[in-house]
Length: 435
Image (cartoon, rainbow, N blue to C red):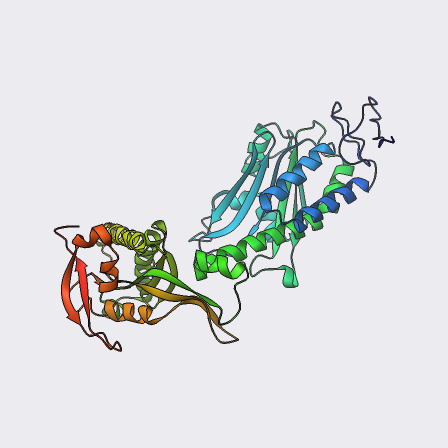
């Protein structure tokens, strides 16, 4: 039986590891890169990883392991790019020898000039200058304090550092995500060899393209989740995109809006209004999500969410728990805003239960993934009664019937005719003496 004969290390004659075109020996510290075969092997592996759908973590980890196997004594590697995210401006993936991978998101700066050590980072220099490469030996000639990150890397034993800036153009760019940057550090006393630097330069475009592809997929998933809601986004990304395609579900409907919002909007400045909306929306979205609900959309100052479950009692219990949590969190928020002399408000909430159509609706040019049905319209009519009935929370008779053992926590408000609904129905609120 024929066996593949791996090349032998030219220093000690041990069999090499890694690609057959490399003469790396695990017993030798110096690199044995013979020709372009190593670069081709690394590029092929990157392409294979990209086609396999590996994420940023695995791409960086896999490449670092292969570079080490090719004889480059990496101590640290970083790859990153800007992201499209309302809170974060960029994301970095760090690899540390012996420690593994970590990911760090960098928050958007309120003041562009207040950016800490970023202005004294090699990545900043590459970004501002659009230089393709940067290199700095970490010896005695390293100016202390010029690049704080390099001072830290040097203290940890690294001897050489190089970084790359790869711009993305055309459809490869994704909004402001128009470049990839990455860096490598090693601890060999003599630093990078010329062959190693050529190798890193050779693989840079492929690594940038594959890394950007993975980053773009992650960005798209997060944006879809942010704008559609987690469940709707997952359904769309899984292929539920046909217009008019929907399924019938049973769910509790949460329909809320903010008290006196029209008057507040007339009385406060735009920035103050947006801050108020964001503060109160965050409270409500968080409690709905934390209790298993799906936020579907904002409608002006209102919020539409569902708690889907074939077990109506279980769904109602989650909605009631979310309501109690919302009341607590809104109270804390309003107290904090009042201490800061900021405008405060409250929320009105309707809870209803019934069958809904959940899916794609709209035109060929603009679709929405949401819920439709008489129950949604009825919930919107119920929440409109909160102010006139002076009740923060009003629930329908269908919801009350589904609460099971918690029915005693509700008290009747009487029968009311809802606009556009033929038959009057009994409405309830939470009995504060029982809840």
